Length: 140
Image 1 (tube, helix red, strand yellow):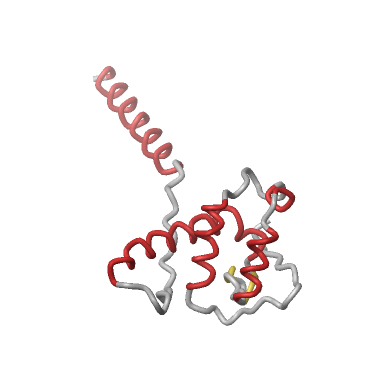
Image 2: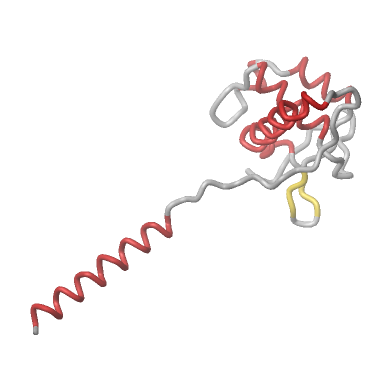
């Protein structure tokens, strides 16, 4: 009887530890869907590729840009609306100097193109960036 009680206790203890460890494992965070507009001249056959590039740009922006460029509005991080001239200027300014400020890697030209697609075609948040302003986020 004593042996059965010890075995039962050991099994319960092991299961408790196993469940608590699995509950502490980080879950991959799924990005929320962001509404977007297709480019005016896009053909139907290119829409799937566009959506893929848009979603990649969203993921890259969140991973590498959002912590500095998002704005806090009513306690929530909001991706600001950049004007087309700001986006074009940003592409030209994207250099190693800016990349060194990133947390862990430099953004390739292809990744930057995806981020620009995301920022250009996402639905407007209503939060604008002043021309020449440095946008500072709250995720630091």
